[in-house]
Length: 70
Image (cartoon, one colour):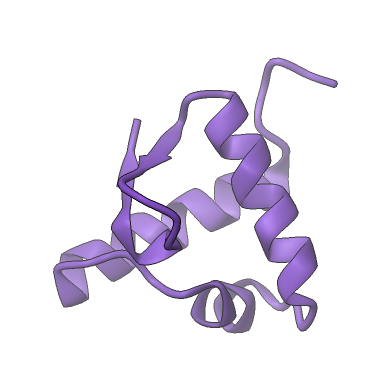
């Protein structure tokens, strides 16, 4: 595994940043998927877990709506 985010992960980071600015909270997995063109929620969750592993995002609790940028 790489220590650098993939292009898809960078797209997801942009979506999270924009969503937080627009709505004041993190997006759901489905909302992220819609914006980056992924229909599989498990694919989005995998990418989010990789971003968390890279410490580019974190979350309070279990839900992705509590996501914070690293």
